[in-house]
Length: 496
Image 1 (cartoon, rainbow, N blue to C red):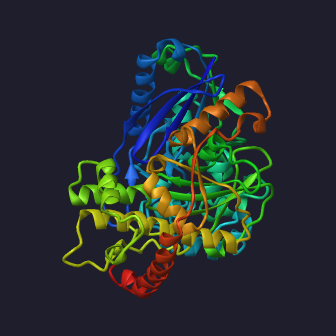
Image 2: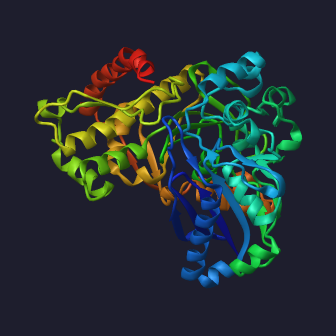
Image 3: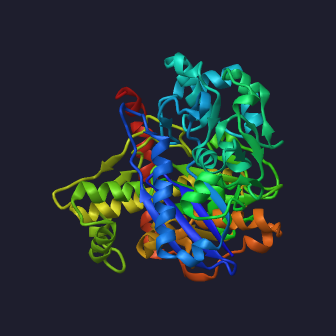
């Protein structure tokens, strides 16, 4: 018996196979492109998600035919907040508006005006990244499309529709819409009405461990599987990553170094504090919640500077950065520029879609390695801002696990640990991230086991400790980093 986890990311769809012993058998992925037709816009075609999911899954089938044939359950995770608008006969009405789209700032203010209790109900500030303001933007600027909306789905839930024909979502992903009463784990009629929608426009709400249907005959035939294969509700990518990393008990935490960056802490009860742009969402497990700070560009910044500087790939640039660094720090190290990683605006703690990326302190000596290092440090400083916001929100942070593609870099881990002044734990298979958590939820939906028995922490691979010499230097640069943002904040708005 095996379990299939599918994670719909921003840059790729990943599919993994996991066996009954929770061992990762194999994984495959298929890339995605993002369209940015106007400033602040970020969109994808949902049909591309389905094409990429099939490519990744069928690559697994080809590589592991025996294990693939033993699949009994499928779990889904995916990028959160995306507005996927469907009309009659499930026709996609327009490209999906993604989590890092910043066009709906005015609609956020309007939503909070229409529902003064929105922060109390949702546990969150209204931000352009969330789904509801995006749909309000469509109502204002594309009224003909809005009038034809029959269903609004999140990205991974569009894959579910294609897999089994059902409209369903889980609590964790739905928390990021601004239509969910996060404490009650139910749709809010007030917030739906404020955006011109009703419950009939929404999918059925489920816990992440519930089954939501079975593979359709068409998909089962295409994949060579039985129609008895169930599809679990799954989770938003961050909650799925937590399930995969065993971050399910109060005080457990993780850093996710994916396209975006997430600092996630598990909680046993609902406790919101949205003023610092901290998110309070349902966890993907029953009767559990979580808090998180989110930076919109993390590993995406590394990809960007790799392309900008002409490095062969991210690994080559990381090696070049590490080779340029002196063991104990030096005056040359102190000359590294400061980087503000706001390539797509920023959420925590600034909630500013107009913020932009900045290099400060360039000289004739600046080269590819110093730019790469500045990016690694700038993302770490953004995480430090997120950590402060979480602590101000009374989050309980104990052990911190690192997951996501950026977890492969020990150098970045040393920088992060020194900036955050915390040891960071790296676990075996941590780079599998949300897809592994989705496979665990697939198992729970099939077996009915207790979540805590399945969502355990994988074995520790290594722990990275803060380095005192680096931490002292980073304290100074973090202060400058924060000052630069405040100095430039009015300039960002003036450029739009």
